[in-house]
Image (cartoon, rainbow, N blue to C red; front, side, top):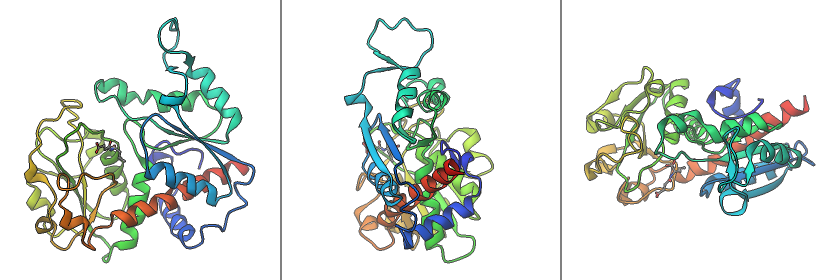
Length: 314
Ligand code: SN0
């Protein structure tokens, strides 16, 4: 694999999932692969699972890890070309990405959307600029519109826990006090469209994801009807896409409860707001897969980094 900016970069999904599951059984089998190589993990936003699991994945492959929080520790970056930089941006992405590329062999990047300017966010300026001006592969650790490492961990989790050939998977919107990005539901939906599952999305009016994300997936307004007979329920809040970045409603009746999901397995990318997104009873039950799902972040990242290192060595 050349890079991992979105799910389109995956040459063979089944192989990537199988490789992740075998790395989980034997984490240090490729400890020599990353010897004398460095991954630079650059964060514009907060992170717990992504930071720790990606670091661990790289270390399992024998890599050195450099982590930098660019917002607090770096110079404020300029992304526009031709700007007269006499304002608050001190360094241009052209220099920054070229320089960082000399220090590391892979750049991993987290950059959330503004949620104020839809066109800008859809352009993925930060991810794409790094990609353009870096001379090493770029891995997406959640960008404005995609979180492909999370989606890969989700696919591994469903593969491990399904007990029928074609399980029913429901992505349900849930309430949240803050406006959240579309990256996680976007990549989850795209991933489910690639797997052999019966996939539905349920969300209130005004919360439809981008048409190119929905594709042929049914969008059901009635959450109860959508959740009937589900094998996996994936909860996530997102802000409106049409009325971009807005919170249109916060109806607590959309919270996920045990009563609604019955015997289905529960999934969420975390961090999760207890008793807002989902009631305690679900998270505290053994139907909840959130901890196993977070564990799979390591094996997803390790499978991706391994494939990129192999391509670099080829
Ligand atoms: C992020 C999101 O994209 O929804 C990261 C998820 C992996 N989540 C949040 O920002 C949650 C913040 C909060 O206040 O609960």
